[in-house]
Image (cartoon, one colour):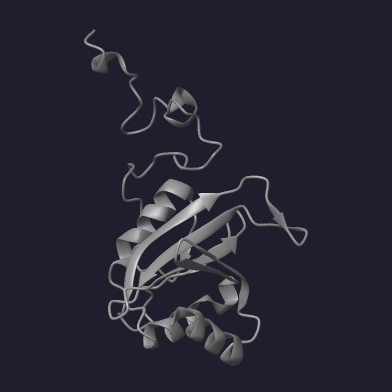
Length: 178
């Protein structure tokens, strides 16, 4: 059934899907951010009404068609009637935003997107255009950096956790019984 939906997207929104593949029964499509909300609206009307998760993948040096596209913002959808899954990837450059699914101009279909988008913003630094409350969710407000970027220091390091921060990095000595 998901393949029929993708064929319909190809007919109604030509060139909206820039790539696609299947792996172990899950279908993935790549959509340019300009077409993202139209594709989401279409799949919602076709039964993919449960937004399971939003995450991102960091590709620090990736170039696509001569243009930097460091991140893939990845959305996982579930059709509750058919139990089919659909993954949508939206490639973006560093600092480039993605349309929010909880913006004031959209129907309130995906209330879970509120915290998912805040988590991706906090951990990867990807902004969501039109999000009504895009503030950090897991780190403190003046935390400088985004922990899931591949250029973030593995130990948390003093580079990002400065002494003048409201909750500075204190090391791991309290974890080893010292």
